[in-house]
Picture 1: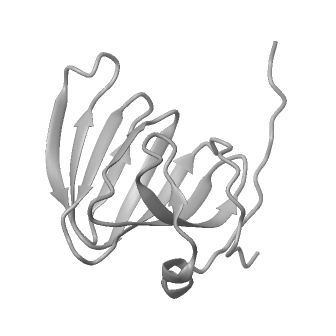
Picture 2: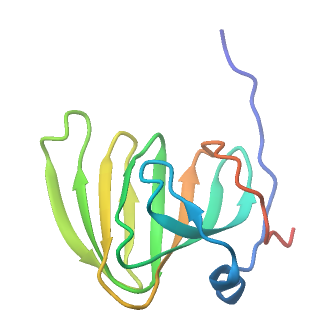
Picture 3: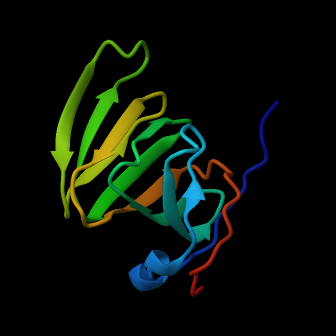
Amino acid sequence: MLQRSVYSKVRVAQPDPEALSESPLVPYPFHPESQFRIQTLFEEPACLVALEEWYKDNPTEWVFFNETLMVVQSGRAEMRWWNPPDWDDRGSIIVEPGMVFLCPRGARMWWTVLSDEPFRRLVVDIPNPGFGFSEVRSLV
């Protein structure tokens, strides 16, 4: 059975890092003892766009259900990955501001924040995985 086409709308958002830094910490699903801040800029069927802040001593692990593009805004972190399908292909790198990376569907990732400054990243999930965070910053 074919699925009905669902169209997204044009969206424009302005990230607000200051408001993000003042928002409450929330537990991370795979490691509830790790906490982070999130500012959902917008959600459409095509994608979810959010700004996230992570902190030292809050290790993060995730297995990606969809393609995710990330752009580092501030801070430094070690990123370790295991590529799909069987996670035999693995590696690590230090990511810093200005770096862009792709997290493919099925990949496993682990981040350790190295800087005292928050590790902030812009996250684009394609398509929208439907996590249900409240949208806070869309202008259009």
